[in-house]
Image: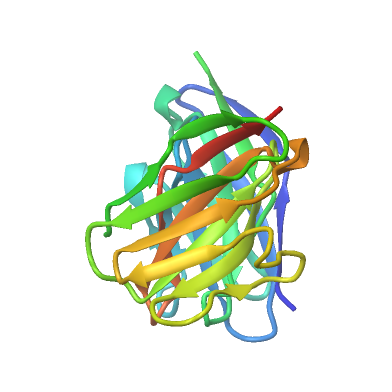
Length: 112
Length: 115
């Protein structure tokens, strides 16, 4: 069975600082991995995804994530936080058939 | 990516009533999904709706409570029946974006409050 664990329900960073949101997963088969972002009062927007190939995946808005099979991790990073990055971030895993499991979410706060 | 709209965007309903949520996509899609996001929580899949067949419900969700229609390849509805305050949630529609990678695209959601 698949599962997703996001470490930290809330993360606070200063504007310009590194953003690191942690995600660990479990899957019995090579997974598809996703990061979605949810801005207040909006639906989910796909940030990036890993399917196969290059383990470092670049997404929109300067975010990237690295698939580390040995650590079963897919952490999301951004070198320099912007105020507009404040949102809820969801890590998700799927092993095919659109049976996608979402993590509990991490709310990112960005301080001026 | 597909552009998805939902109606209503939010509603406040009385206990015991029903609400139908509409999901419209700007292109034909095979699969449409309905999720529930309870306050402060993650997404839980309610059901998958394919055109021309009965919706497939996940464990814990039943058709009598959440009837779903999928009359064509661009539209679906979810009804929340006989509502109670516990049904207060955001209901999200999503569609298949890429079958080879399980990519989904989401609508803006319907924020439901039941009094």
